[in-house]
Length: 157
Image (cartoon, rainbow, N blue to C red):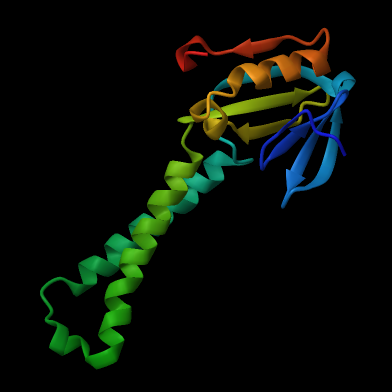
């Protein structure tokens, strides 16, 4: 497959957009299937509300576990098990925080909205850092033809 533009998440050919996983195409999106294309700030996960809820629960559980340690000394908790008891809340807290960060709409994403109502979002922060955004926009324009590309002005592209 000859990609005109390629990232780790998607690839553009002359007439299609391919969703990639581990450098292999898993789905082809043709230009006639698209309703609109947005380049904006958003999230690239499918269900951000579920991920924020999951992260919040992990943070609350870690605070509960930390609260149970309050006022106890390490010697009272007992030997080797105490390191696991201390690291578990720290792990849960950090994993919950990362989940909330990943689901928050602060990332630069390319969102494809299909005519069926389905959405695909791809993180394009690396493209903007490498200053390849113009190449991405021109490649998308060639593929999409009449479909408009909506670019958020706050991104500075």
